[in-house]
Each structure stands twice: as C-alpha cells, then as structure tokens.
Amino acid sequence: MSTDQDHPSDFEEKQYGPDDGILVANDLRKEFGGLVAVDDLSFAVQEGEILGFIGPNGAGKSTTFNCVTGTYPPTGGTVYFKGRDVTGIPAHDMVKEGMARTFQDFAPLEDRTVVKNVEIALAPDKLFTLAGVGGETEALAEEICRRVGLGAELDQTPSELPHAGMLKLEIARAIATQPDVMLVDEPFAGLSGPEVEELSAVLESLRQHGMTLIVVDHNMHGLLNLIDRAFVIQFGAKIAEGEPDEIKNDPKVQEAYLGGDEI
Image (cartoon, rainbow, N blue to C red; front, side):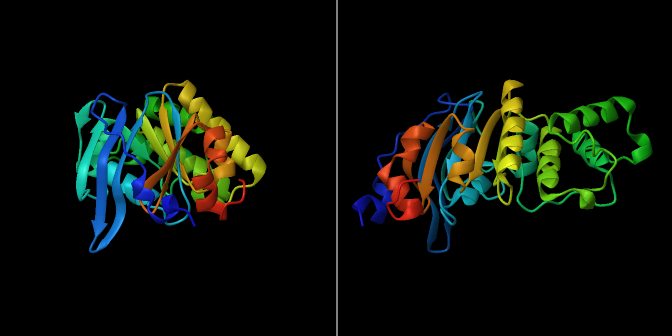
C-alpha cells in the first residue's frame, strides 16, 4: 500500500485567506476526544461553481461541513464566508449569512402539504399560522417547488412523496432561505440512474440562477457529470483535488475507493 494512503495528511496543503473564494476553510480541524475527524483541511469554493466534496464512507465529509455550517465548533482553523471570518458561528446565524444545507435525515412537517412546508421555510423567524401566510409568499413557494420539479405535488403531504421527491422537497426548503451557497448532502443516495440525471438538472439550474453549490457524496459516478471540480478526502485529510477527469484517473482516489482498480 502506498505511503500516501498510509499518511493522507502528507498531501501538501495550500494556505487560504478570506478572499480566495466565496467559502474558504483554512487548516480546519475537528477532534472528538482522541479522534481526529478533520485533519487540518484547507479548501476554497469559488462563486458560481459546483464543487464535489467527496470521499469514501467515513472520510469526514459530513463532519467537515458540520464545522463549516456551524453545527459543530471546529477544534482549530478558520472558516471565511464572503470574505468574513465566520468560524464557530451557530448554524441558524449561518443561514442568515446566506449559507443553506440539506440533510440526509428529512424532517418536513408531515401535517402540512409540500407547498406549505416551503412557505414556512421562507419565513423561519416568523411565528405564524397558515391563515397568516400572504399570497406573495405562497406564490414564491409554488415557484420554488416548480423549480425543483415538484409542481405537480404541491398539495401532497411529504409522506406521499417517493424518496426522490423527498430529496427535492429538502432542496426546496433550503432554497427558500435564499442562500448564496448551498451544501447538498448525499443527494444521489438511493436514486436510480434517471433520478440522478433529473436531480442533477435541478442542481445545474440552481447554478444558472446564481447559486454556488457544494455537493457532498461518496458516489463518484453520480457526481462526475455534474461538478466543475472535485475535492477528495480520506480520514479527514485531502488526498486529491482537480477536474472530474483528473480525479477519476488519480491513483490515490482509485486506491481509496476501489483498492487500486480504475473508477
């Protein structure tokens, strides 16, 4: 086995500053007791790109973005968002700053329709009843639903949606917070080939509307046709970075995923 595989943190890390991207992490570190889950990781996301943040199961992908989005305070390092140091800012404040994320564990309001779930996400700081939601908010919620491919399911409840529909609803609820950057967590898990293509078209459409996207997944095949650039980690450290073709042919990535076989 290669020494790079034994010591992925030996990958030479570039240092980043606040102006190197719309979202920047520099020497990000997260420890849980004696376990190093994120190992001095540095990366920059450029405005308007779709970045694939990928790695095998257990690589530290979700932990990294729990630190970036304010769910976990990092043990060390700095997070910059739109040129500002936001390290350790709580998740609800990061949403206000313009960063949204989806979750693998869906938590919609089961007693509300699809469109009402999105309406509520449009006004997260307001306590209101359904009767108090104005027509403008409802129209915007309907437009968001149509944008993600839920135009025909507006009046269904979340429990009536298939898995792919639940993913779309989760994305719609994130869009409703009007983010500049959206982190999409494991969007292709459990989807068929056609469903992956359909959801990829939705994500590309969001980019065309000015959103920056970071797609976190361990499914290399689902991501390579969508992303502009990939950032690959293993054991909490970077092992590769580059365009999809470079990543696909990178020996370290092949070793991490398939024991050296070609992807």
